[in-house]
Image (cartoon, rainbow, N blue to C red; front, top):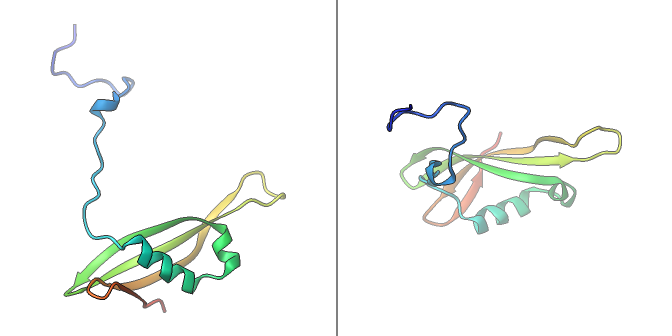
Length: 107
């Protein structure tokens, strides 16, 4: 007989109401600003391959936030067994929250 407060084994599935909820905490770049930045930086051929855009907050100085933006692509060619996923472009940027402007600092 298991105890009332016993922890379930790894094989016991977790119920939906018991799953931890991931909260979106911390700074973010608005989608409109990010979309405008990417439209300026990517060509039409590159934009057609986009699978995912990942934003990673790095640090903050006064009114400027530093971010890494990775643009992931998906390529399904007839020669390959499964589609390949890779980082198409990567940007190191500064986001000025006061003016809502992204400045590319990529070397």
